[in-house]
Length: 328
Image (tube, rainbow, N blue to C red):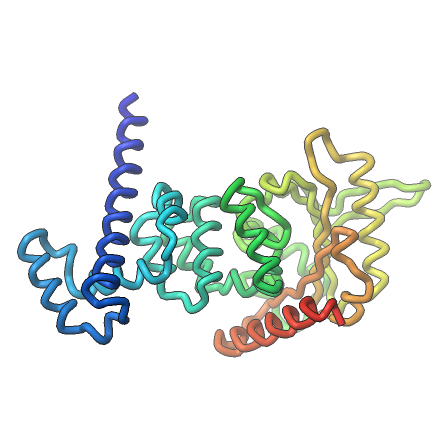
């Protein structure tokens, strides 16, 4: 009873403080600065800050007042914010409000709420460009909005929110030349880091899972279960670029698992083909998404962050254009 009460009080206090900061930022922006950005009212904000600090302490410094104004600008809907404030702290919001794109802010806020990230974890997710690596970022905003609204309203996770491209595997410590077995062995040695890169909800079930079909033996590289998607997830590791023949192999594995391993209440298994490179037109023509197959690159060495960011933004724009033009 003591622990429950303490927890409830902490949530109420956090939510109350967060909403207070939003209300202050909204009121300063709308009524004192008359809707202008705080840059134009620097003297007003400075004077207000000094008055509030005298009356209420250091929590109302000029810097914090500017955070509050930006907070109100970043989250104009106080009903959505009210739900978020029960799980995200003011420190969480300060990490989010300075992101460039409105949809990007909403994505991190909702994922943070659902997966209960700490501030440190949130900072790492943003720094690793998680949003830019999700399939969601490559969709036209109207389609992406539907998935984000479903996440907000019913905590419904989709593969486009979970799967990434590319995956950062620089922690494996692999050099220029290595075999597929070396890649798999390195992943097993660094399973904790690999699970962190995959994301919340993945549980490792086994490696080289043997399945027998018509007296022929096949071996699944890595098998996982995703708790939020409620699906078995097959991961196949490939050394070179994607090849069309990989589709048939993965479909065989997924259909066998669906028939023999899928349990009541679970959704159909999905597959991730991790390749050193992708052949985008082949992937599009094969319509892998309809088969529950996701193809992604993996990087064992990371280029400079700005190079990655430019590459991601170019890929996002190209993908959105193709989807809006009907995939042509």
